[in-house]
Image: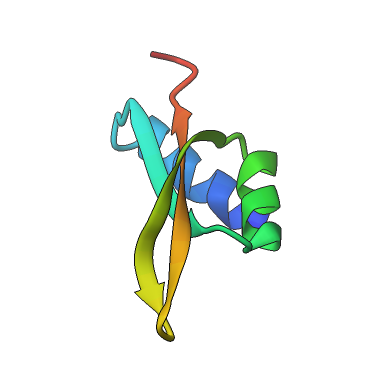
Length: 71
């Protein structure tokens, strides 16, 4: 379901809004989300180490993006 949702919102952004690039961020360790985004065509762009603190623990944040294949 997550993969299909990511495909739908990127298709809408590219086809109807004319976007060139869509990016997102996800917490390191959220393997299911990362895999879902990869299946929808997103690629890893980088990891920001210790970017956020959650429950008194620093966590890495992964940045991913998808480029409009028609631009």
